[in-house]
Image 1 (cartoon, rainbow, N blue to C red):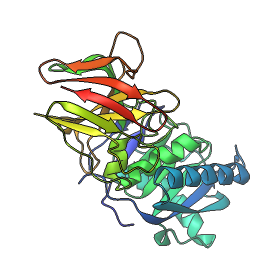
Image 2 (cartoon, rainbow, N blue to C red):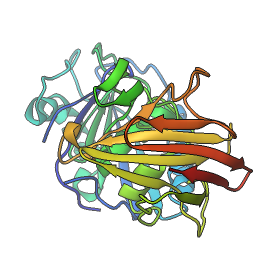
Image 3 (spheres, one colour):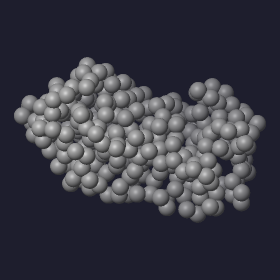
Image 4 (cartoon, rainbow, N blue to C red):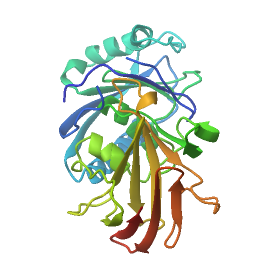
Length: 315
């Protein structure tokens, strides 16, 4: 699947996006090559990586309801560097230069990187202040590939931005600490559960969701399974939109995310900011009987919550 150039850096789970469009629809077969490149050390096995990419393939297939399928090849360990390859700078060119020897080594081993939609360079013995960097359809990993790291970086190649968080949001934007990758319910944050309804809509995995404005009752289904019901409610405001989503596992409650167009860094999709303290209960969701109020805008009450759907009152 052809996509526009993207650049993102994942730094110790506190990640930074550098600008280079919103995310593209991600459907069909996605060919991925994982290049294991080293100057000598082999800190993990090829089998470890193959197991991880199988998990990532299953994760993407489940999250997309079978609409996106990863076809992954993993190289053996390739001798690509004479020493520590370094970390590059903050541009596509500098990172491309770091992995250039690994690309040559892959070609010499019979792997034509141009035949793949995405290429992941896992660099051994790298001492960088970030875990992963993505530019265009290429990824550099400086740590052993994990499920969360692989899915997170592939999400960037698909065009997704980070899943952020703040204790509360309002006219002054964030209240308290703002976390660039603080959403624990999305792999684009720090989670391993599933993508959000907003992210699945961006990727074309679920249909466009309804925009609401009139006071009434609505029924929502979780975005974690196929449904003919709405899987998010969108409330438009001056500088973005609120996405209200229901999750039935591992809790039953509503999540509130603000898609902040002002913070968009094209061509990545605008980031979604999860409200981590919507009530005084000190948890990032509201349960049945609770309400979330945005002063001067709307109030949402969760009136019914089952394993398959929720009923909410919007005012």
